[in-house]
Length: 126
Image: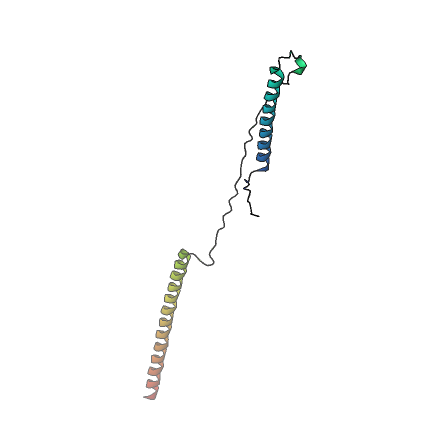
């Protein structure tokens, strides 16, 4: 026993139904033409009721509008952007410079006070 695969086309159920109806219409048309040729070709003077009814076929094409929903996933980086980092670094440098200058100023004040204290002590000793 061998395995046989039957390919199957994936199609919309409504399209499949339309296709089946069109195939049935074609089959019925063919049947009408063969039945009409058999009845009409027999040479019988048929009555009007013996003629097959006239069938008008209308094929309606249904336009399908397919909506595509596109979802975009945006990855948000955790943390500041490069511009924000540069601004923060600049701010930190500025604060460090201010602290350094403040520390130097306080150091000079302490040195001045020490020198003054040394001078006063020297004057008291003399």
